[in-house]
Image (cartoon, rainbow, N blue to C red):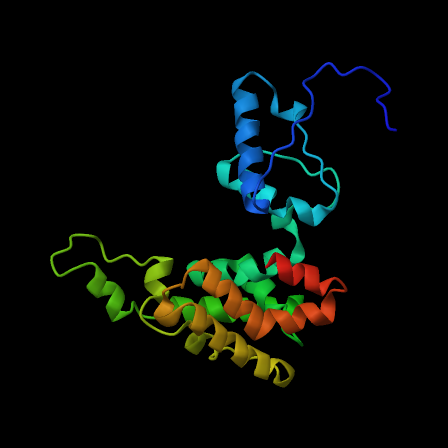
Length: 228
């Protein structure tokens, strides 16, 4: 039989029956907030789990509620490579000025390294700056709008194809096929420059591009795909 090496000064453990990982994460986050309100410092609260992937739902819930936390083993969920990779597609269609997202997305394609991604970004900046304000964006202001005709990132892409603009950039023959696939995928997740719901964008990116990349680059591909 197991026995404690010293007497406990705290309450006895409680067994809480919950339906799934999402409900468990909500319960833990709520309990953490209750303890904080009772005067317990957040750095005095710990959550133990058997495997790192068991904490995914909790990390999402803590982030959603704005509760700071620290992982003492492994990498935080949103800092993992596959999460950042797929997020770069979403970040770019939402904000085409996002240089970091553009370059990360581009480097996932064969034949594109750091230097090539830099050159492509410079080409995108030129293409983006030269694009006239779409008619749809002007119409959105209304005929009597007094808002100055200044362009935002959303104005720049709303009403026409992001992929069409990307296809104007020069890429190597080795990268051409996947670059065309990238352009098509971005048009799929943001038709006429209007992003789809995040969950739909993630599915499209994984199925069209990232699934093959993950298989070729990660030994724990299946776990990473489950995260996504």
